[in-house]
Length: 368
Ligand code: KG4
Ligand code: ZN
Image 1 (cartoon, protein in one colour):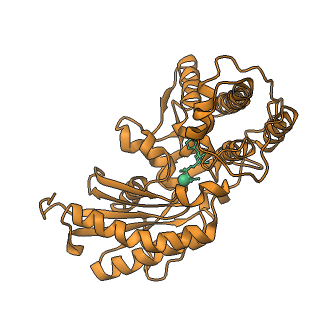
Image 2 (spheres, helix red, strand yellow):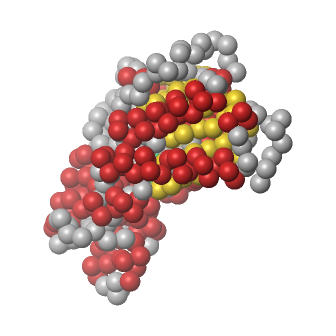
């Protein structure tokens, strides 16, 4: 599908974790294409990501994906105005593949390379789908690696007001799924199981209950789920992990219902934790708009919980389309574009830039 040459564009690359992603955006921020090559099949049997396998896979997938994306729109290097790449945070081996490739491409094309913080990408992702979202807002980045509650005042102006003190929200979903015998990623599976349980019966404890903090904690909840699974003889250790489709084929039984009950009871607490944190944070920081983003933002139960809170407190609630919740390159391209046209940000020599496993946003001091 060739497009007019006068349409300059930005190519964005994302390889921070287990997905190779490439997107093309025009200079107005419209996404022309956003492609993801998932590595799920490679990692699912291990119940989590194997970093060494992830970086090796990026090395073979990324060039093919870029060739496909450029070919699909008949784009030549001279049509590119800039190259954007996730430089942090993530698995360092995976990041290095994307950064090295992006450097070479930008150098060959003779265009600037714009390094993007993956967390900032997630935080700005709702702008891709909601043109009426405005700074400032309160955003929760809930993914497999992070649970960061942030006041987003403007581009490059973020205040971290709470974060997890142990596991990330997505990590908790993945670990609970694994202990029940399910493959990675566990979030979507737990959500499906929870949807099949009409009335969850288990009262799991709410972590950090009664504490003043805006931080999160999921490891105590995870232990409570493990204990319940062991008690009910549902705990699976080092066995072959199954998919949701495998589970669906089980004949209906009490055991099947008890697995669903654990999933639904767990999810019910996660929704409570997230809704209560927003509620508490909004008292301290009375923002008009709230945002949920990152892989966990695909979860309908959590979205509904926050929608109800927003209605109660008369706030506007935004979340990205599901394809823009989980890792993708469109959010990286969008974020890069915001920096591209802004003269406040002087770009360093991009041949010197490096990848980093840590995000500057993650390094901000939590103020409570
Ligand atoms: O943002 P993301 O794609 O990658 C990271 O930056 O980590 O998030 C992946 C995480 C995984 O832990 C996955 O289980 C979780 O997001 N996730 C979900 C759902 N879809 C993905 N968690 C709960 N419910 C979902 N529907
Ligand atoms: Zn992510």
